[in-house]
Image (cartoon, rainbow, N blue to C red):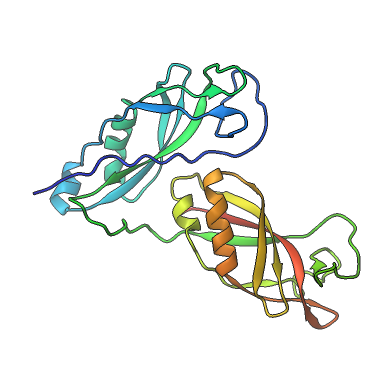
Length: 253
């Protein structure tokens, strides 16, 4: 007997702390706006082809919740198979919400969000297999004047004093600890800027998020960077500890 689990809804929202104009589209910032509250979330119908093939899947949809709580401009961001797109959009168009409101005056606002629709058979506990993500990491060199000496922790600031690219740290092994999964529902190019310490052996530590395009990327960015391994930076022919800025991005699947 085939059973479909309820639609899985996940909010993935930007985290920029800015006060936009009244008609600008908001995204989640706990200092500015309350999230929209789901009122009507119908299940998406399993496509006939998927039912025949016993094929589970996942479809990510981006949409705008208007000031009445109605979905606007829903469009598929990514799907494990194109067969899930049409039914996902049909379901999302029927969603209804109590609209997002500002914390300051409780006025309804436009709100940008992403949802994931999960197509399963029965109560299969295994995660749906996703295509491999295309992830890249780049180092960000400080443009500010820096001291030629290390800081109190013994770390140099990664700057233009290092002879790029030969003396910069190099990514030896990236550990995808949830970053790709979090990026599945987001547009290509979504990522985070972070600062981390890379010691003389290439071991990373003390990761701090500078900014993320989406709030949901913050924790998996930290986990992934801490579990990754690097070749150390080289200064005057010797490996040194550096405090480095990085940009971690998912370019698609």
